Length: 434
Image 1 (cartoon, rainbow, N blue to C red):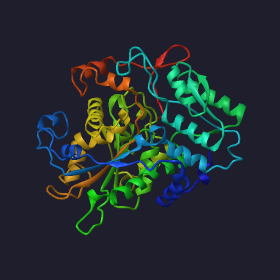
Image 2 (image 1 turned 135 degrees about the horizontal axis):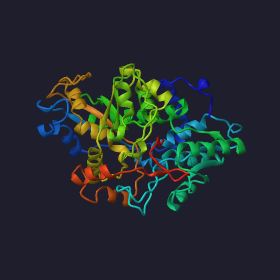
Image 3 (image 1 turned 180 degrees about the vertical axis):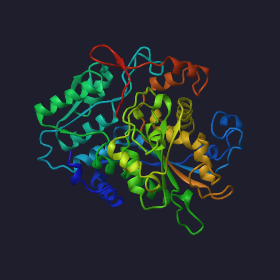
Image 4 (image 1 turned 60 degrees about the vertical axis):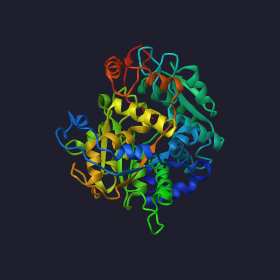
């Protein structure tokens, strides 16, 4: 990729410039509303929901929240990643790209003992790999995608459908990166990382510019004077951090607050934990098999510099459990009639069930700033639905026993084991970049 030191600065104007570059190649995905989910978000939780939380014994708050969903699941390749990949290539000339590009595919891989994914199915290829393959196809250059040899024919075919050249490797990050290095030596292809680069961050941030404009011009936000109120807050999933840092960059200097959301299962909430630690140290390793498989990776170095700046960029990061993620998927599918992957709904789960976030909305305390009082207009909250790459079989497996956090789910969490297999046959759970 372009030398990071020579890239445009991480500013709102740079995101605007990135948007102009990639507009012809991306979809302006819709912003949808759902009165049922806004009503649910505006309803106090039952007191039992606060048991075991810092708010146990307190009266649940009563926020007023108007939800606006930025549907990146309708984007090309089914996820927001095409924005960053397209911008990364747009910033490089034909001579720089003459040898093509390379990255390694990520995501999870099938294991008969992984209860949430039926053994005869496989999750989709890593969204970045698909995005890069499509962006390279549009530039008429080769795309080399390194994939684990245990990938199923469905996964391989999906990656090749965008014209990528698939090279096989072992399944651990070390094995994949070794093959990537071999490809670079043999082809002189350019490595395009999934999130840890300014050009990727600026590209991902373009979704926030669209959402900002779409909500402010929406009839549901018009004031008596005919002007849109706009967004009070945006919440987005946090994995490697390219999207969240891009959104924070795009909205910096506006009145819109930005928040991140992560799964807590097996320590996947590395961003939240890093911000809470003394000195705000970045957590560099994540080994989680959360159902939100696109978020099984630590925040990258460059995104962390943006996210850890505090209230000037990202005001807070919140965590949600596996049952809450499943329940949010069910609500979006059943109430909005929209198909989303589990990683996409962690922001919605925070809005619905994190009492700390909700108390911030009503300004009743909770440790972070909120200006709205009960009975006021409440907040217009933008929720990024980051992708929809999930199979029907996987959705069926997710809710096969009724889902939503009952005894069956807790048993599955106890039984869950590693689904990545190294060349030596050892099973490992490790960082997986989306």
